[in-house]
Image (cartoon, rainbow, N blue to C red; front, side, top):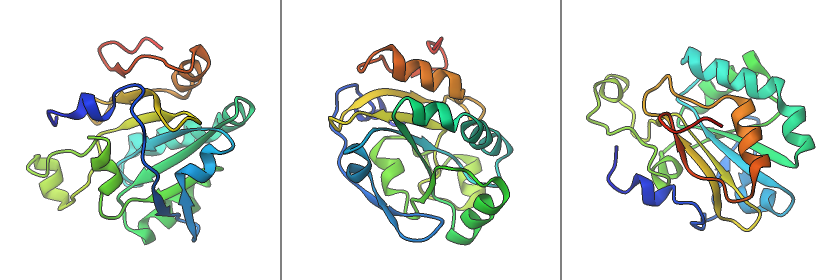
Length: 180
């Protein structure tokens, strides 16, 4: 874990805008979405990861609840475009899948696994993410965040919805303290 991860996920920290390509084609700008609603940034490892697929499917099946709560989901991976399209075709999520091909956005939030980590080395990936979720408010600040301690550690859709409903400035969670 990077030494500055807690600062990068600090509640109230302003999130800079970013524009990433979508798997469907075109681009998505974070600030454009924030004009309308709060946004969950969901960092996932790739379509090859069964736990990521389960998480994306669960978010898909709960998407109407997110919409009703005026929340958007952006799922972000450093996976190549063609592999991302396979995820889109296989899972058909109603939310956007974004391509962080150089891992810049993943690094911006301190969610990158150290490239010396054996799994990252085997995959030859830079910008390979820890599972993580960040709720960005319409004021463009971090309102809630979750950084998985392992590849298995990721919040459920119900936890995300509770965190969003609880209040606009919920505490940062980790696997040890996430009872949300």
